[in-house]
Image (cartoon, rainbow, N blue to C red):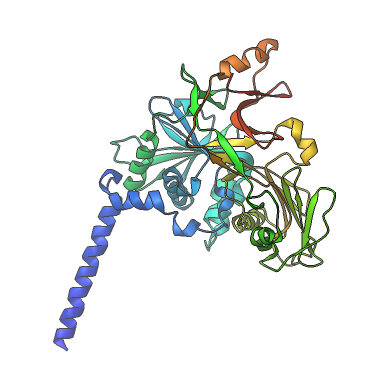
Length: 448
């Protein structure tokens, strides 16, 4: 009996020592913590796996280093080290963030920062729901943000200065005119990892400067060298035919993996159905797939923005033919249905449909999905995946200044500027400048 007690005591001592070592290890500087960095690099945190927190994922992540250089990331945000650590800051914010006031925020004034940039205004309470799904005191914790900010377009994270033992970071929820500013104490390991992320960057990365709230790419003297893109249709066979076998493989998951049958070709292409409630159309000429579900949604299902967006994200993740990264570009709510709009992103640049094509396609974004009471009722997309041609290079030589100066002669400041790939009717992608000025939109190839 005494021997068993001794063994138990030894076990408890070992367990205590391991826990203490783990705490010291995780609070150590990330420079000396390879396990923390490896986990940051390769694993999304367990509590954010799945789609329930999808609304909190930004359209893009922007970082600014101490030299005033901005970098922008659209792709692989789920595995982004900056996002991992910024989410950790948000966890601490909802627990212990201290409100510092409503202020005007200029990222240029911050020594360094990381920015969650959203294409739409995110309601604060909906954002809080993504981080407090299982919190017993949800309303009180969510009100920490919602009582100070109705919604925002950017979250600016300013880490604690290196060498400062306080580990007090600043979090700003910016609606475009002013920001609700909070301070929060974070783990030293999180602060160190944020600084590592801010300092990291390849010499081949496209860099940006900030002008009037816009982040604009900078071309070097020789221009911007990049890999051109090509489109691949996941629905057609190698000989260019959409076969029933191919449709079964790529379209049946939209029907919950039910068997589908091929109906008579319609004027635009092919029509598939599994029952009286679901129909998928493939328009070969326009390269568009459209799914419709006419069955009724559950009457008792909640119809909130986060849950409907989670349903949309789950549907997109279940589409086996969708291989290109995408980001939320906008949404509408008509009182009963949410329509979410997405654009593709490749090589950390978005893909846009030009205005000249939108009417013919019947869509303004690369993917459009409509949800009510957590049920997808319509899904429409450009049926291509886009990839880099790693074997070839191209150069964009028309700088933002060269493109914008002639347009700005009449006065006014651009309301939006993007360097993006322009999709055209030949299913090709051309790197182009997109600019909105004085209520008009302009697009021009960046190759000069």
